[in-house]
Every structure is written in C-alpha cells, then in structure tokens.
Image 1 (cartoon, rainbow, N blue to C red):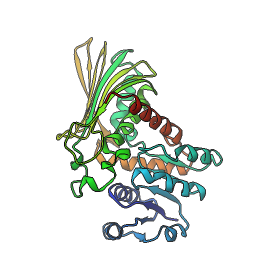
Image 2: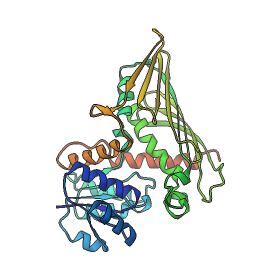
Image 3: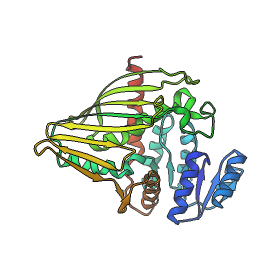
Image 4: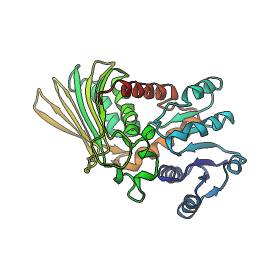
Amino acid sequence: MPILVIGLGSMGKRRIRDLLALQEREVTGWDPRDDRRKEAEQRFGIRTFSSLVAAMQESIYAIVISTPPDTHMQYAHIAADRKIPFFTEASVTSDGIASLIEKLSATPELIAAPSCTMMFHPAVSIIHDLVKRKAVGEKMFFHYHSGQYLPDWHPYEDYRTYYVSKKETGGCREIVPFEWMWITSIFGPIRGLSAAIGKVSQLDAEIDDVYQMIVSLSDGTRGQITIDVVSRIPTRRFVLIGEEGTITWDFFSRDVILYTGSGKRTTTIAVLHEGRPFHYEDMYCSEMKAFLAAIEGRPFPHDYVRDLSLLKTLEQMEREAIL
C-alpha cells in the first residue's frame, strides 16, 4: 500500500524526496494544480491523481498532509474518519484541532502525528542534554532570534501568492509555534508571556512581520525570543546563559559551543547526524522516519493536544500583545 502525499508544493516535494530516500514504500501524490502533479511525476517518478476521490479509492498505508496550514484539518479529518495514519505539517491555526482530538480519543490506536521538525535537529538534543546536567547552572535565561526575509522563503514564486502573506497564516506567525515547539521540549511549557507584535517592513502583505516575546518556562528559565520575516541575513541564533557558563548555537554552523566559567574553558560540540556533519534535510528525513516508526508501534514525540495548547497560547498572546 502506498503513502499518499496531499499537497505537492514546496513541503510536499520535500516529504516525497525524504520518503523515497527512506525506501519504505511506494509514494503517490495529489494536488489540485496540474503543474505540480506533472512536476512531481517528472522529478520523482511517482503516480499522481487529478482527483482526491480517485486517490482515496486505493488502499493507503498512510497520508502526509502538506497543504497550506489553514486546510490541514480538512484532510486530517478525512484520514481520521477512514482510520488511516496521517501526518500534518506545522500548525498555524487552531480551527478543527479540538474536534480532531475528540475523534482521535475514540480511536487511540490511530497514529496521528503533527509536525515537530526542530525536535529532530541534533543540536536541540545536545542543548537538552547540557541543560539536564546543569552545564551552565540551575537558573538560566536565554535570548533567541529567528528571522529570514519573507520573499527569500520561496525565491521561485511571489510571496503574495501563497499562504505566508495571509493574516491568519502569515509567515512570521507560522514560525512562532514552530520555534516554541523545541524550546518548550527543553524547558517545559510556557507559564508566563508578554509580547510586542507589529509590522516594520514594506512587504505587500497584511501580516505582522515581527514578534518580540519575553517568556517564562515551567522550569524557571526565562527567555527573550524574536521572530521576524524582515532579516535579509537568515538568522537562527540561540544563547543560553547561567551563572556557571554559556551555551551558544547558531543554526547555520555545525557546532554547539559550551563556555564553562569555572575553568574559563570553551568546548566545541559537533552537530552530527549518524556520525557525519548534519545537513538541513536530515531533520525532515528523520521526522518522516519517526512517523513511519510510530505506525509500527514506536512513540512519536508530539501530539495534537500539545499542538493545540501552543496555538491557544499564541492566540492569547496576540490578543494581549503590545501593538
């Protein structure tokens, strides 16, 4: 039975590429756009369908939903109703998730996996381990900046033509829970939050393009997080500070740096994937591998209950933010 990828845009093509690299099963695809179906057929040699009804008539092993985020739940509910294991890309809106959770509670054996890509980055595991052994002390604070100019996300298409330019699914808004995901996996749930949100660019889109947040996490760690879609130099830089030292991680480097204050010593920890230097695609491939493993009985590291909690926190923050 094949794995059906719904949505053959940027992320759909990535998921096809990774599934084929894992050499697990046949992959098929559906997208309402004829040009995307033809591209997937030519690039990957897969079968595609012009009709979702036709695609769903086949016996399907699993479904990967890579459509715009405001349509994820439409297809997730279809998969849940048919009791087909499914995966959805990163969530941005909460609509439909609560009813999906209710549906899933009636079929707990059904694998339903919301994306948590950054949790598969080996640097996140390194930082988690350093925090667990109190490498920089017990009380900590951090600052984190994640930014990239929105038109550079997909240089091959106009940013105004796809979901990142829409208010409810704006590019900057999308990245906030995407980054919260891995941060809360290390320091625990958000228990306090304040923010300033607004638009500083001339982008031709009615979206907030910068979120500046101060967070308090359940383990007592505090942090400053800035997410933007204005930075012309792509940025993802994390600095964790404690009385015993500092942890520094630049997403675009291949190392996590630990500075230990007592010995005034700097330790460079290589970010590796299966013994070799980590590459950007690795975390996406690992995520697909984990989804397939979950179907076979292994736990997946994220669920829709936590997903919904993060999105509700995002909505509350937006209501109370300084504009």
